[in-house]
Image (cartoon, rainbow, N blue to C red):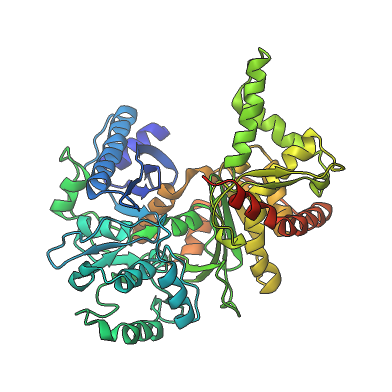
Length: 534
């Protein structure tokens, strides 16, 4: 039997699994069969909007996007395999973590969805970090909730339920107010022993807000945490009609706990076991390591979240990665056009990236800040992209490209050094995924130097979070009693191909020297912000 016929039969037999993830600019769906390999996909483009100073998506945006994405998947399945989707083995929903969706007792949205992108909760985040002795970033749901309390917003007394985007969509599809623990860890700190919201911190928060006469206490208004593999309900008749407006999809399909994009990224890169980690490097960047034990210190630069099974993860989140690098490559593309040379952008990226490997290990005295926006890790509030050099610096093409690659990972290195050097966190291997790694071996070797850790890039790394949540849905119905890490190793990644690059000691030394110069030069960025007002 051909793969085409096998996949068709499994779709007809209801053995396929669908995962859907709400990204910041695209909603994507993946359909997998029993081999856990993507067999079809669908997508829908969308954009957040600034509404009265709040970055948001409307509920109409959410449902129009979900339905459009699923319809695109169904269309592609029918076009490729000649069948309609009626039954599925399981469905999973994932989305951008954090943010604030607050509903009243009639399930009406009280204020527009406040996404992770908003930086309007500084006072609340700072107070809670001090109270809990645990870093609470501004984008976390509890920071948004407490800031609304501090602001005396009238809607607060009417709150019946607070959710993340994934938990909200799952609730509407199943009727269940639950959340995957990885996504839940971006709402409120998780106790590693119980796998639930930290009871001691819950008590402190309730004591802090006791005088507000809110009419509710935590965790009553939060969804219930579930670990990967646990039952999270089934698709209701209403949910089936919400998801598939054609009416073909049947109700009763099991749904896995809704997860955040950090958790699905861990799954898609096989980075859920302790001492594993992954780095996503594209427009923005983050690095995550699954910890063996809690950190000794509290770092505002480091988020603490969990894997989908509740293991503690340290994450450094960086706002700026490849945007400035891409802008410089575009200058070379324009130059080619001015010279009458027809250049392929992909080829141009490859040529310039590989040229960077010929540069001096410390970039020859060049310095670059790729800040299109502010960077909390380096304590810079706004962005002014800067390229700086001294008169005696070695200004050539190789060093110029190398410094822009270094800049793309510099803030990540500053954050990850807190873990690797200050805390002595151990990581056996980092998985690299995202646009920075498309040119074979280049971004990978630069990241290995930045973290002084082996970096692996796999052929499956580009599949992304929709595949990750599809795998979590498949694990729920096909896990067979294995741990998530065991199941991924055996059933998904056993034959996966990839390449590992170990750090070159000379590259490591050069990057460390560069970072020392980069840190000393940060006042230049501050001066540019003060002198070049938008």
